[in-house]
Image 1: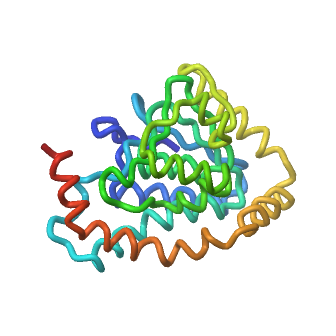
Image 2: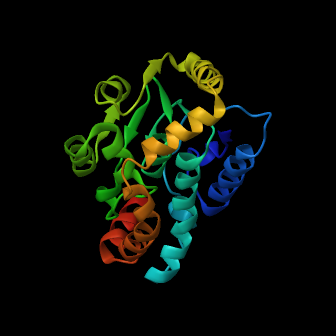
Length: 234
């Protein structure tokens, strides 16, 4: 599956989120699909949420309802019984980094970066990324990454257990496909059960499905976010 909005570095809008959500859900029931690979059309993996898709002057309730699609996308990836592999071929920023972290296995191009830059634009983390970061790297690393809002390069991502391996930029998709085939060859029921048990080792992700849209909606209606996005749009 390829995020294909290269003119905006594959930024996620509601239409793209719904298409990807539908594709992930359809793959769940397709016995001809053993695993899923998600990547972005070059040069980026995903630049995060598309600011142009946010309705001007919308209230917190409207923004929370809009955000629900993004949370459901992350939840669909984490709860899919199929292995989901991210081929992070370029920058994965904000919601794009969260989408990568939702996957079971992450291959990063050696020039790629993850950047969970939510606080720099006045938002709390989205797409369940608090739960995903804590599960992968622990609370201390998660806090450091979220509070700094800075980039994490591929080598550091592997070192901090945010990603599984790196590959040359030209090989990242092929490496991800190889990983997907390896995971997809495992006994399907045993894999799905193991994935579910790992996910339910903490219930935070399931709780965030309901809480996060309200928090993000309130923040997206705040003067902090509106001021930050005005500066970005300039």
